[in-house]
Image (cartoon, rainbow, N blue to C red; front, side, top):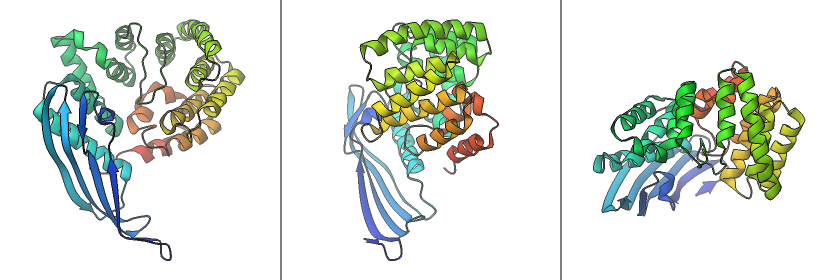
Length: 325
C-alpha cells in the first residue's frame, strides 16, 4: 500500500522481469530472471526486502541451469541502480562459475567493474590475456578493448584496437548510437593534443557523415554524430544546432535508452565547443536516466576532458561514484 498522507510504503510489492537477458551478456538467454521487492517506510529511504532469481539460464548452447541468485533486506537508503548492478554482477559471477572460459561473459563482467568502479584493470587484464592466447577472439570484444585503451590514454593501443573493428562501427557504450572509425581517430588525436591530426580525421569523418545525414535527414543518431564531428572541428553553431536537432528527433519519451544517449552526446558537444554551462546542464539531465551514463565513462573517458576541474562536473562525477557493496 502507498500512504500519501505521510509519504510511506506499507508492504508495497514490486516485481521486475528481465525480458532481454542479452542486456547482461551477449550469449545469455533464459527465462524467469526476476527481482521481487517489498518496500516499507518513507518514500525517500524505504527498507527493501528483495528476492533475485532465475528459473532458467542458458549460456551459449550449453545447459538449462536453475539459478537462485540472492535474497535479503536493505534497511538503509535504497539505490535501485546499485541494486540492479549488484544483481547483474551476481548473475555474471554465477555464469562464470559454470563457464569460466566464456570470453563474452568475461568481457561483460570486466566491463561492469569499469562502469561501476571506474576500474580499468579487469578489462586490461582480459585484453592482454586474449591477445596472448587467441587474438582471433579480439574483434567480438572490440568495444571493451577500445574503452580500456581510451581510459588509459594509450593512443597507440587505441589505434590498434580501432583497427580490429574493420568495417564495423564502435559504440563505446550500451546505446545504439554507433560512432565511426574516422570519428574515433579524431577522438584519439584530440586526446593526445595532436590538433592537426584531429582536424584531418574529423574533416574526413564529416565528409562521410554528411552523406549519411543526407540519406536519412531525420535519423537522430546520424545527426548527433555529425554534431560531434562539427564540435571536434570547432564549428560551434553547427554542432550545437545538430546536437539539439538530434534530441528533438529522438526524444526520451519515444526511446528512453537512445534518446537519453543523445542528451549525453549533446552534453559532450557543448563541452567541446566551450559551452560548459550547457554541458553540465545536459549532463545533469542525462544521468537521471538509468543506464545512460556510468561512473567509469564520466570519470575516465576523454569525451569529458574539457569539463574536468569544473566544480559542477566534479560533483556529477562524485554522484555516480560507488556508494556501497
